[in-house]
Image 1 (spheres, rainbow, N blue to C red):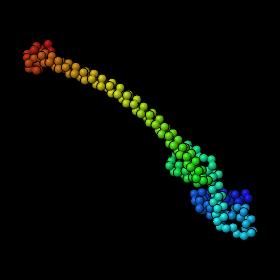
Image 2: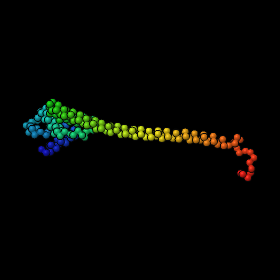
Image 3: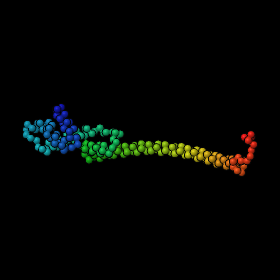
Image 4: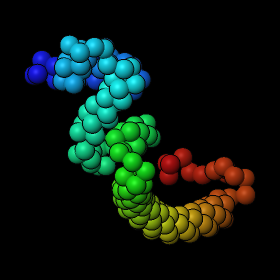
Length: 188
């Protein structure tokens, strides 16, 4: 019996994405005790074998998917789709499927909301950092403008002083521009 369940588990693992193939392999294994008893009386009908295999496959999927995966680990669209498919495949009836879909959508929306809140917090921090950088830049620009105005005033003052000194130099020099005339040679 343990060997049969191990073979069934192995068959289901090999065909985890293809339900029809899993049913076919389980039918080929003939795991049901009724089939073993019926084999001595005669061959069981194919419909019974398929129904029993489908029930076994659904039961195996339900037991594998019963503990719902936490939505915290799901990061991309493919994982959400896979989880939805597992939830819907493990539903026993329409009511169970609706309940599972409702839980799934609630978890999906909660995960999306949490992601949006996390991104919103990050964006707020980024905007705050940019705001502080902008303010620091404005303070720096104001300081540079103040220094520039001081430098420009200093340049104007120096140009005025330079012009005044040039005028004093021209007045102090004789009209010839160079030292001319007959000066006593011993004075120089």
